[in-house]
Length: 426
Image 1 (tube, one colour):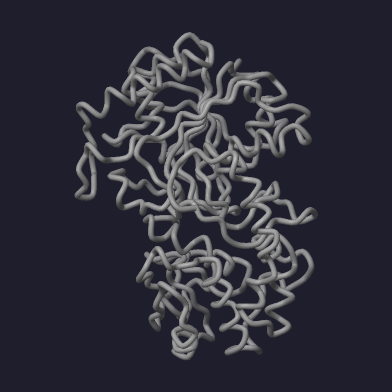
Image 2 (cartoon, helix red, strand yellow; image 1 turned 45 degrees about the horizontal axis):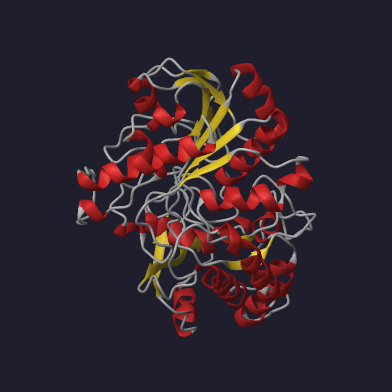
């Protein structure tokens, strides 16, 4: 299968779907205008583009088709694809594990395919698993949420490193970025690499996983792995624009992780996840994770302070909750619930910073960083440097903190432009 054959097959699939679409769970959209994912385009051609090769699939419960069937189940049922292994990221292939956990290597009872535990696997781990399964073509299909600290993009990065070393073909089945195509926030600095940020991109990267794969392949892989993936294919979407809302795609939303229940969660997560670096609760263990933020010391003043700040596109409601997992379990947390009123105006990264600034200013004696604000604190991994903690502790304003990363953001935005695949406001 050469490059032209693969693209031609995908293109034929896209053309066929327009004539007779069938989109389950569409949210009131005209099915003929719904987004076609990369997975759907190949599935509608019977997966023939992957025939004749030993295929390894990196996916999780989000790798579905519009009828809610999983791509692995569809590939196996088609008889056209020889899947020699499935590689499950954080939370596992079928999604049975919580944050920071994975499913063990096992045989998938539905398909009989071997599922490898790939959570946290680096280049060497993927090389070992790919060799054991005798993979020829790696297929990646996972719904991302657009944040640097969401681990699935780093699973893809490590797998690409392995594929580059081993000379394997790498295929990305593209899906929408639920927070759109705008890049926002600080850069990850050298010395602050971790499992939630392995290379130098900004907090809200503004790319699909396919665009990121193209960016990684040229910008990082030659230096990090000694070579790029020679045969990288991105099976693009049809009818997706970077300035569209996920609700307008006509696609079902499947939880990418247990605490990402809706596209609206993803919209705020890019900013409010910074509270994972504090002793406050980010709403894990509630029905509104990352929308509810609070602490045992929180009062109605926090919401009042934030509403007075006049942040665009969001209102804050005084809220109280008792988490059943994660931080502050069984304790009443007082704080806020975010209500996004204008998604186009809402800036999640600025909002997250403003919430930290307000909490520190209102509760200077009780607000605390996870790990005590030491040089190895978790906030530094999330932010990508010590800058945010230092500036918040020094009493810097939201405007000053956001201004501090504008030059690095502009440079990143310039560098990513050649790898973008979709038209729309960026």
